[in-house]
Picture 1 (cartoon, helix red, strand yellow):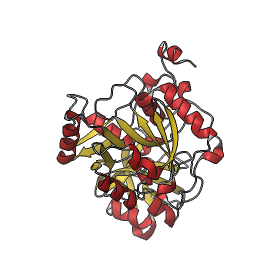
Picture 2 (tube, one colour; picture 1 turned 90 degrees about the vertical axis):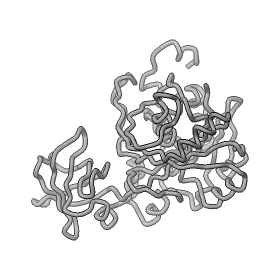
Picture 3 (cartoon, one colour; picture 1 turned 180 degrees about the vertical axis):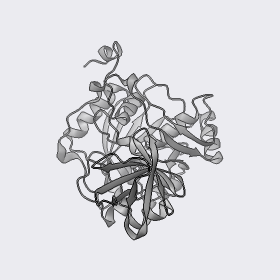
Picture 4 (cartoon, one colour; picture 1 turned 135 degrees about the horizontal axis):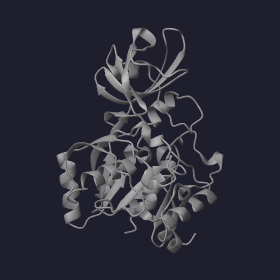
Amino acid sequence: MAGQAIAERELTLADFDFELPPELIAQHPLPDRAASRLLHVAPDGLCDLRFGDLVSLLDRDDLLVFNDTRVIKARLFGHKPSGGKVEALVERVLEPTLALALVRTSHTPAPGSRVLFAEGAEAVVEGRRDDFFVLRFNRDVLAVLEEQGHVPLPPYIGHPDSAADVERYQTVFAARPGAVAAPTAGLHFTPGILDTLRVHGVQSVHLTLHVGAGTFQPVRSERLAGHRMHSEWYEIPPATAEAVNSARRNGRRIVAVGTTSLRALESAAMDTGEVRSGAAETTLFITPGSRFRVVDRLITNFHLPKSTLLMLVSAFSGVEAIRAAYAHAIAKRYRFFSYGDAMLLERAT
């Protein structure tokens, strides 16, 4: 479809669909994080590289922004007092003993229902917020998850979590527990690559956005304007805000490591164009036509068909550029999704 034809009509969910051979969905990480491939999507074309080549694409003045969220073992298996099986996916820890969770069971649990876990841990359903249940635990939620929880691997990964996933579905710079999905662009970085970037003079800063289960929720509205984006918590330290704003004032490029870093930065700059420090919630839904105030370059993985993340990267680099990149990646047998390969995108406008 011609770019002009796209510009003349409203984009719909069907515009972000594509056929992906199932064997290209990466089920396991590569033995070496840095062995992933890297597709550079530039205005003048596509370039096939290795992730270790990233340093050659960055300038000393570029500022990398990482998301230091830490994936928690958010999936719990338990049972009702009657014996029925229950699966809970903790979306967010609200208080030490209170959490929001998706709950899968044979019948929708009513307020006051109990869920029993191992070692005397249990939770009572206090109510509901949209798709999530409010669970009151009898112990510290994070402690229960660390003892009994499972790595919340995405639904397209077909094997149960293992000890390898505990390490590899986590960035090497993860620091603040709270995510139920990994900021997957960061999974490619190794201590060696980070050291090389520092030696090269590339600066980096961190923020935190706790990725929620909503990142895997499908877009149910054919019209993009009808989709309600899930809410995610983020926090930008004062030093990070100052570094980003200073870099922008001096004409330096801001490189977001992952769509989560990009969403946090753009959310924090929506009012004035200056990135504000502090904690907030974001429901920012980025689609073609959205204006980018902060980020100039984006490191990201390949995203699911019809997903909000595919819409985000299409907004960033252009619908036709992303279509061409994905077609190229499929033809060249790139590995897709969380454990897959990466792209470096340049902002179209």
